[in-house]
Length: 158
Image 1 (cartoon, rainbow, N blue to C red):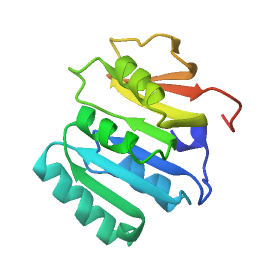
Image 2: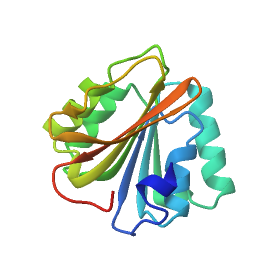
Image 3: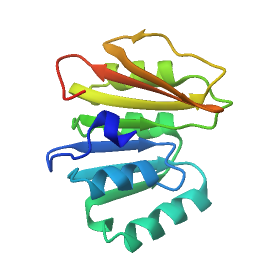
């Protein structure tokens, strides 16, 4: 996936890892040069794993970790007024509302111009090619898993 969205990132890049799980996607982006990342998950075990993984990778000083519902997190992050250039949405596959989530991120000003959004989902489900200002740039299927990669607004490296 990182060979598609960009093998390296800039220290100005801000990452949102919504439904973080182990934090692997956000941590990988940080290790490839992204400046800061916010990790959100409701599961207390997941949050503990994210924190341990950040410490092990020596990246905890560039990360914020929140145990909170995704919707509440988005509203909280809106108040800061700091958009993200890289958005990872990897919810449990039974949840099929990432189109609504992307729309909300856009409406609340959390998607920077040219932002990349990566949505991981079940391969038997397909999101629309356009979600508000997000346009599908790449769709890839890997067994039971699919990735839908979107770009928001203007040009980017994808």
